[in-house]
Image (cartoon, rainbow, N blue to C red; front, side, top):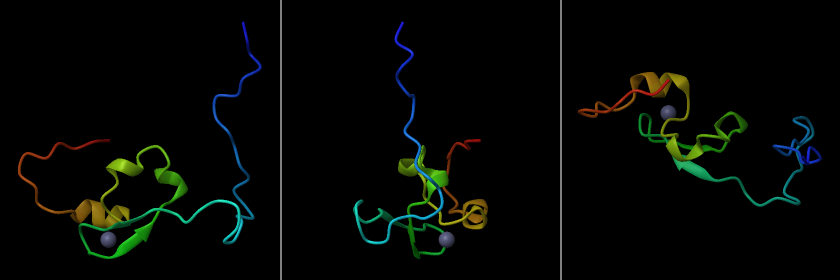
Amino acid sequence: MARHRKPTEQTPAAGLPRGSGRGPKPVKTCMACGRPFEWRRKWARCWEAVKYCSDRCRARGTPLPGSGREA
Ligand SMILES: [Zn+2]
């Protein structure tokens, strides 16, 4: 019965520190447009699965045979 613990740590969305405190954001290369894109907060839970820089690129994507779609 320890409800003292917080499930997730929340940080203020506004006013992100600039080049101080946390390290650099991870960067990936979009598989659709081939451009590098930075980590975004909305990808915090699925960053490893992110392959495209935007929903548009994701919609286009790359024609992979037998690739399952994830909602
Ligand atoms: Zn892209």
